Length: 396
Image (tube, rainbow, N blue to C red):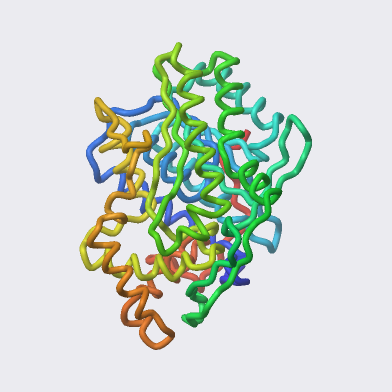
């Protein structure tokens, strides 16, 4: 079939298998162009099919020759209907990993559930024995707690007594407008923490440890974001930020739990990038389009794979992991550079429908958004018939 992008708001309803495959190959080629990292040998990636999770799996496999198990929740293809992009990403990754002689198996299902945790434990026990790195990179709007059976839904809202108002942009049209968001109530805050905090990460590590599957010195990493003052009311000081605070506090609890193995849990604070999740957050698309412009002009812009490769090479697998005063890894350092943030803040004040095409990188934002779904990828012929029915070779 001929596959075209069908966009609805901040989501694309179709994905292109060849475009997703080329994206994965490009990321693999980038990692292979760098010096190998003396890093992990057996890796579990929870949330392995897109974004930072996919980049972590690629970096582990092709930067350190690691065996990888990937857990994700993706929609498979049906005749005449495309899979979700993460399905095609995972198929492409596994094909390349197997060609390179690397172990790679995948589990598709709800990572919050006890069923998928148990299935993963059984696979690791049978095939790998233990893992020495666990990446936790889940992004979901809802979670059913397997212990209580309660389903929690997250919200993107400020916390406090006042409605948040600021600029945002429709990245499809380039229209800059004012957005207002009413503050969250206590129940909404608690539900967002239940979905996006550290509770599930801790459950995974507890279960893996109880099953004897964590190697001596095992490391686990979860991903977070802080961002600038212009987004903090709706992000870091909002409901998501409260969840990230919980995630970061959980890292210390997990580290204590792993002390008998001489293991460690880290939170890595990463850079703002175009993802399905970030595209849904008001204010963030405008901020990213201005940030991209500034960082590209300074020659310090990074995509997902560049971020994670640098995380592994320059932070995680150094003799001593550099941490900030709150005990976090900061790989957002180039974004949060004082000069970069001053320039972004000055551009923010100038941003209008008329000025944005000159002062921002809306085209770069749109391209990255389409790339998430396998579209607008260089070297792919989109007028060519493609088979949507792609299988993941190592799916359990």
